[in-house]
Amino acid sequence: MDEKHFLFDLKFLIETLFKEKIKIIVITIIFTLVGIVYAFNSREEFVSEGKLLPEISALGSSNLGGLANLVGIGGFELGMKNNTDAIRPDLYPNILKSNLFFLTLLKQEILNKDGIKLNFEKFYHYTIEENENVESKYLTYFKGKPNGVLVLNRLNEIRIEDLKDRIIASIDKKSGVITISVKMPDPVVAAGVAKFSIDYLTDYVTDYRTEKARNEVDFLGEKVAASKGKFYSNQERKARYSDQFSAPTIRFQTADVQRERIESEYRISSTFYNELLKKYEEAKIKLQQETPVFKIYDPPAAPNKKSEPFRALIVFISFLMGLFFSSAGILFYFIIRTNR
Image 1 (cartoon, rainbow, N blue to C red):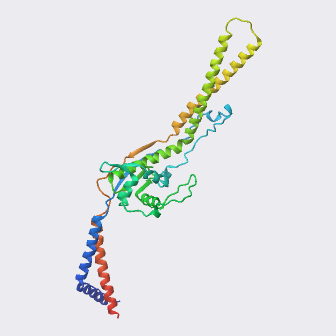
Image 2 (image 1 turned 60 degrees about the horizontal axis):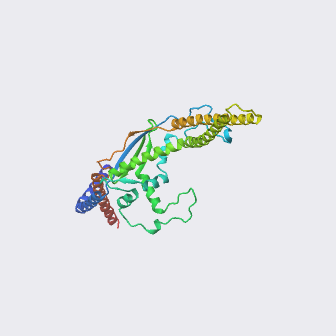
């Protein structure tokens, strides 16, 4: 196609569109009005962010020496070993993608911008689902509920999928800062959910990292209590026996044998109790050492500025769509009519 012919076609297209300018203007105005109505009726959304700085260095490298060697005392084994941090910080955001997290969130009490405290599930239904009636088929559960298995209805599945888009956690691998972003129609609720997400994450990681150490502290605490009672009992028994035979009386071999037995049981119970007490204090120190440290780098704030909808952008896009579709439709209709 030569340049002259191209210019002729372009001129012809422009003339054709100009002749149908009224239709183009009308269609463009209709699209723009629809965009305006949509923009001003769209629900406002607010985004609140919180930043968390976790402890990066691995814990559990300290050796309390001798604590793992307390084996066979009283017929039990501690099995205390150096613990390693199984959850890497870059995996922390995945905790906030679990079904258990969202189910816990739905049961939480939250505060909205009007200062009213309500259940988050109710807030979600009235504000995000706009109080729509839920069909009974979305509320039914499977009858089988095995232990350790979550059985969800369809409604909860839909809600969780939506909340996964509204609650996003990410980590900056260079700085290690975890950012938790929450989008909600209410700015105060958005900040509250962000704070709950931070608390849930820190509590989960802390419980996971210290579970074994806490179990060992509880186990040793029970053993210390039991051995303390036995030690005190033997101590009182020894004192009573000493008082009984303290006066100068005729000595019997049976009395000496009994005294030796009582003193032997007292020494064993004393040694056992003191050794357990020492290990118990060491275990408490280890628990403190293995408790991870989190610092809220930037607490969530209730935003005053909405994140969406972008009304001006929606109206502008609607205008462009109206202009494009009206022009394309007129040209398409003209080409079909010409080729008949």
